[in-house]
Length: 131
Length: 186
Image 1 (cartoon, rainbow over the protein chains, first blue to last red):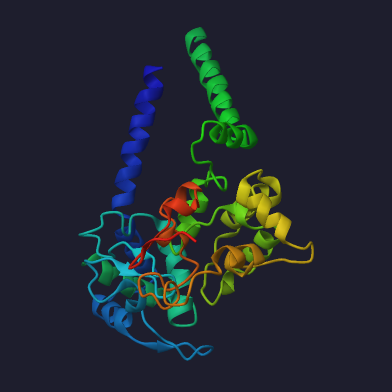
Image 2: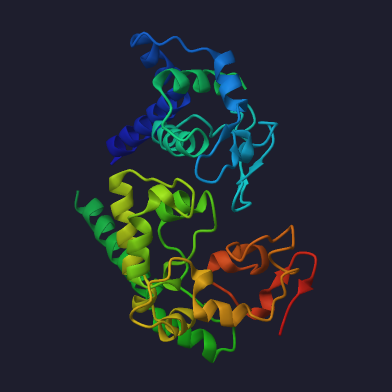
């Protein structure tokens, strides 16, 4: 019984450690593939406006996340509040690889009209980690 | 060893019993009515993954508001989800489809689910709850300025803005508070 508790405690502890470094780990992996992350490029991509070819709507990351990433955003269509993007304000941000990849896929397609390249993902991750 | 087996068995039995109570829709519904309290209109969400995956962008609508055929249709077209990209990985997509169809209106014995099913023809596969005849009938007294043109509401898709206990599955008229208009009863 005692052993089970110890093992579970150790598992919870290590999983927390792993979570804390998810963004760094992803960036390190990109680097191994020869991709140098550029936070500035990430910031300008974040603020860049794209035109949706179907609706002619102007879209950017800020459409939903707002202009101040320390503050909550608002879903452009549904109006639902989106928790702040800056990890310094919202410690849950960039802590789960699955979530990061899910939102990269959905949001790059919505905003840019295609999936982001690995270079773009690395740049965005590196920009957001500085916040 | 014997002790932990007993503990395990007790936990399993009690969680089974608790689940049994929680999903006893009909009884729960009747009991609440008998005591004069407010009854639930639709079964509350019982799937954490559904709440998270769908509830990040909009209210996680209770599966009991649409028939299974509607949920199936919605879940196979997430790439263009009313103009938004709402793609899920295939495992999550399958799990959530199962949750939605298992708990769809025809399988949930709740007031609104039954009313919704009654109002639909077998040919109807509504993709929006707000498009259904039942929904329209229930909201037809609301002028545009109260919902669509109200900057704090904007759309009928945002149940939770006016139905203050929507996330618990309660859509009672007495709990309606429309931002800028307050209590609303027709």
